[in-house]
Amino acid sequence: MTHFAFREEDLTLEVDYVVVGSGAGGATAANELARGGATVALIEAGPWRDPEDYPSSTYGAMRDVFDDWGVGIARGRALWPIVQASCVGGTTVINCAICVRTPEDVMLQWERDLGVGNKAWRDAIWKHQDKLEVELCAEVVPPEAAGRSSLLAAKGAEAVRYDGHPMTRYVKGCVGSGQCLQGCKQLKKQSLNLQFVPEVMALGGTVLSCAPAERVLLEGRRAVGVSGRFREPVTRRKGGRYTVRARKGVVVAASVTRTAPLLMASGVKHPLLGKGFRAHPGTGVFGVYDHDVDMNVGATQGWASVQYRIEPGMKVETLSIPPEMVASRLAGAGKELVARMGDYRRMAMWVVAVRAEAVGRIKRGLLGEVSVDYSFARPDMERLRKGLALLARTHFAAGAVKVLPGIYGLPYEIGPDQVDLIENGPLDPRSYILISSHLFGGTTMDKDPTRGVCDEYGRVHGYEGLVVADASVIPTTLGVNPQHTIMALARSFADRLLDA
Ligand SMILES: Cc1cc2nc3c(=O)[nH]c(=O)nc-3n(C[C@H](O)[C@H](O)[C@H](O)COP(=O)(O)OP(=O)(O)OC[C@H]3O[C@@H](n4cnc5c(N)ncnc54)[C@H](O)[C@@H]3O)c2cc1C
Ligand code: SF4
Image 1: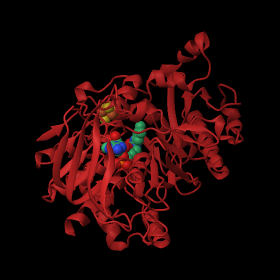
Image 2: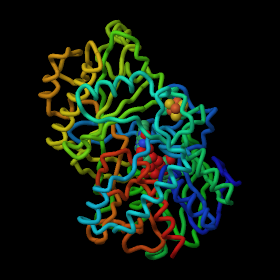
Image 3: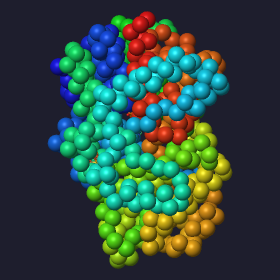
Image 4: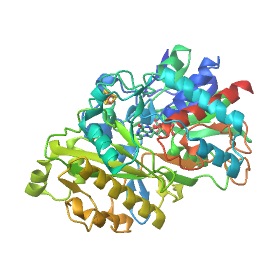
C-alpha cells in the first residue's frame, strides 16, 4: 500500500493510468481500473482524513474537509455558495449518502438530443448501479433511524397529498447521528475514502494526497501524465514537485468547478470547455412545532419526494443542520437571535432543490483562480417559490405552529393562512439564500465534437488517452441526487479504457 502525503521531496512515478481527484467519479474510476489489473496513481488535492479525525462542527468541516473553506460561490445576480469537499474520498465524505438511480427519461433525452448512449449503454449504467448498490450497502432509512423531522415530513406530505419515501442511502446500519455533513465518525456511511480508495491501494495502486494537480501533460494531442506540487492543506505551504507518467491514459475527475479549469491550464483546447454549468440550487424552510423535533437526531437526510421532479422541476427532502448553521440562517443578531435560537429543538428544516434551467460557465482567471458565472432565470425563481410554498404547507399539515420562510422582504415567521406570501414572494434571486451542492457540466458529453467536450465514454474529443469521469460530463440536470449516476458513469468509462 503506497500513500504519499505532503512532502518536501520531489517525486516521479510511472503507472498505467493516472486519475486526478478521488471523489465520487475519481475513486470509482481508479477502483475499476485497478480491479481490471491496471497500475493506478490516484492524485488528490486535499488531505487524507481518518474518521477519528473528522471534525465535529461546521467550522471544523469548513477548515478540514471543505474545498477552499466552502467559500466558492456562483456569481450572477445573486452570490450563492457552492459546496464541495477537498479530501481523499472527495464530496462523498461530507455528503448525505443518498443513492438514486439515473432516471430513464434523462438518459433518453441524452440519446435523443445529444446522441449520447443507446439501450445497451443505458443497461450498462444500470447494471453498474445494481452492483454499486450491493458494494456500498444501499439501504432504505429504517423508521428507527429516520428522526422526527423525516417522520413529520412523511405525515405532512400525506396530508397535502403528494408522494414521498424514506431515502435509500449508501450506509451500513446508520444510527441516525445527523453528522453526515462533517463525515461519519460511526463508520456507517460508505464514503469512498473508506471503500474504493483503500481497495485501489490494496490492489497495488498509489495515492498522492495534498497534491493538487497543476497540469495534464500532453504530447501533441495525447495525454501522457500529470504534474503538480504537494501543498500543506492548512497553511498551503508548497512542498516538492511530482510528475506521474501515464503509459495508457489520464482520467480527470477533479469536480465540476476544477476539472475544466485544470484542462484549460493544461492547454486542452475546446470552445465549450467550462460551458454548460448546471445545478440544483436549494434552500430550506423551517417549521416550528409545539413539541421537540430534535432534527439532529436521525439520518441527516431521511425522507424525500420526487413527485415534482419533471413538473415543475424540483425535489423536496428533509435535511438536518447543526445549531451554528441554523443561527446563520435566521434573521437578527444579539439577544434577538439568541431568543430565536430558543426554538432550535422544536424546528424541522426541509429543503427544495430546484432542477434549474439556468446554464452558467466555469472560468479560469489569469492567476488560475476559478469562478462560476450563474444566474437563475425567471422560471427557476418560480419553481423555487412553488417548492418553498409546498414545504410551508407540508409543515403546517404536519402540525407546525409557525413557518420561518427565510426570504428577504417577508415576515420572519408566518402562520398557516400566510403561505401565499411565499407563493407570491420576490422574484429577485438576492432575496433568497441558496446553496448549490449538485453540480453538473463544464466538459459535457455530446456525440458531436462541436457541441460537447467529451463523448459518451468521457473521452475528450480530439485527444487521445484523456478521459473525464466526474460530474463535469453530465450534460443536463438530473432532478435527483447525482452521486449514483457519477459513479456508474465513471465505472463505465473505466471499463471502456480497459477494453481498448
Ligand atoms: C453537503 C453535500 C451533500 C450532498 N449529498 C449528496 C447525497 O446525499 N447524494 C448524492 O447523490 N449527492 C450528494 N451530493 C453531491 C455529490 O456528493 C457530488 O455530486 C459528487 O460527490 C461529485 O462527484 P465528483 O467526482 O464530480 O467530485 P467530488 O466528489 O467533489 O470529488 C472531486 C475531488 O477532486 C479533488 N480535486 C480538485 N481539484 C484537484 C486537483 N487539481 N488535483 C487533484 N485533486 C483535485 C477534490 O479535492 C475532490 O476531492 C452532496 C454534495 C454536498 C456538497
Ligand atoms: S446520520 Fe450519522 S450514522 Fe448515519 S450515516 Fe450520517 S453520520 Fe453516519
